[in-house]
Length: 490
Image (cartoon, rainbow, N blue to C red):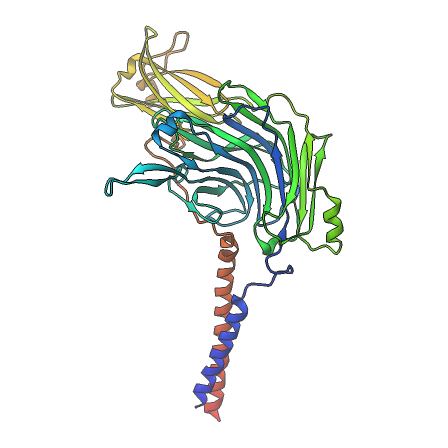
């Protein structure tokens, strides 16, 4: 009987402990209340209708967990070729930006995001013979090449990956679209520039499956608190230098007129501050919210107009740095020539690569092209490498090119010193192995996760819950054992 009572007590204590630990902490806010959304609506009336490139400078002077800065909301153009291939195509929509949130399989709380809502088109069902609506989704090409669906405000595919951006530091975000030479399809990529270090980073790119397309729409921006438990605290954004590259003219258009506003996103649960403006001295627009309930909430709301339009000062065209190739290598592998290269540390991002093999008479005898930003090695097969030179032409996302010529083994360009022979090299120390590079035949991969707003928070709490429950269980059992021993002694 005594043993039963002891274990009943142990079980009761464990159940209470688990209930206390597993119930999520109550927020200081009322249930569901969130900070206001801030919106930036660019005036696109002076720009072309379809764009190949979009640029914007961004800074978050203050950042709160559970925040999304959507720096571009846009659509993809339905060209004649696209409408012919996909009858009656409709829907779609895309956005890109930065988040302060942990989840989605990421290792940090600083993330880059690119999402595509699905399109629909009409096609004949081969089984029934009836025409039906078919869903078309973009496909991620890098880094995962794995479809990552999302839902909620629609359905589609998305990429959310680590990008270790820091508060109170300026970054440039670039969206670039291009026609892939292998797929006859429009790709869209997302890049970030750390303005402090001068280094660019490719976050992801997608195959839209659309043909001869480009970006279109108003390129609207917003700042959103998407977790009610993290509504309190100051979240802020600064943006400037907004540009699009017109697809038809290949000229840059400056977006220098915007309308700032705040809103509730269709919900009545917004509280706190909602302030915005234009810093004329430094040339950026700004928005600030704090989801802390105000005693003077009504007065604060009435003091700020729903929206206001600003004309901002910025150069007529953007500056984007220089394309450079740090090193080019040619390697003989049987009858093949393997060409590899590395970009300069602060080089603008590669988008296209062309390798040409040239004989001693200056004639191009072999060519290979790729439009893949991650590729840094290509193989040209069945060549007499002792008689040819290599010419590498790299093109960046801004249309700049860099050309490098390199002699293959056993042949030198005019004016160059001959390469040492194999006998001369035999006594030399072996060189360090080359750094591994992304190749056409060996794409890189990384982990992925879902799109649950609470994933990051829940994943970080679970190990703590398990550890504490285990400690409590061990302590209670130990007490029970002591009681049993004492009972037996009596």
